[in-house]
Image (cartoon, rainbow, N blue to C red; front, top):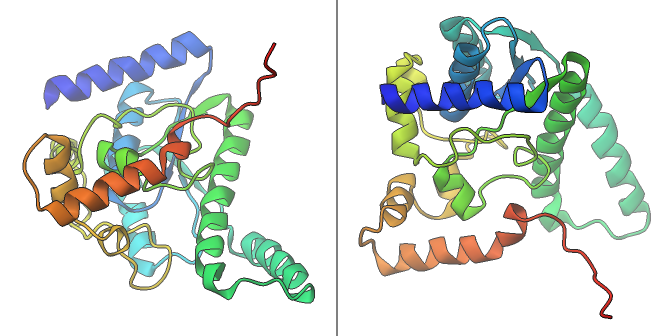
Length: 247
């Protein structure tokens, strides 16, 4: 794990030099993956790294854990409260479609959650422009393969330092980096709504996805579920489709 961490840190420094930016920033949610990335970028650029807390319908536990992440790795930080911005924007959008009798109540919760993810990423890029930093993503191998991220939200980043590591490997990395234990072992959740967990939403567990990615045998139902998610979310891992005139 020491070798893996050192390799990532060197890679992050290379990205800074290659792109000509001054440093790196990450959104800190209070979850495992962002805690690991915060610790990594702080090691790579101690004086030019930034952890951004963006409370928005966040649970009190997530807010407290986010602060613990900041304190534990010693990263520079700031807080941008997006609650009012989100309420104004989503209420305005919702009002317009309701007036047209075209409001889709079935998709309301998901549209709301995705808007929050995209507001956070817009915030990170605004700060990145101000500081001349790269936006660092937090997706691990399990999330990337299944597409468990919001397109142009938490998936809209410049670089992905832990995308080759499974959830279990990220946990091991977190322990090595001395991330607080309650964050290492907490139930994974994107904190999209009360009681939401990643595994309930995906319909399978991270341990099962990790095993699948390692080439191990898993129950056929889980295998089918994982492969369906991968196929359905392929568009998230690609750029926009382009029209090419045949000549």
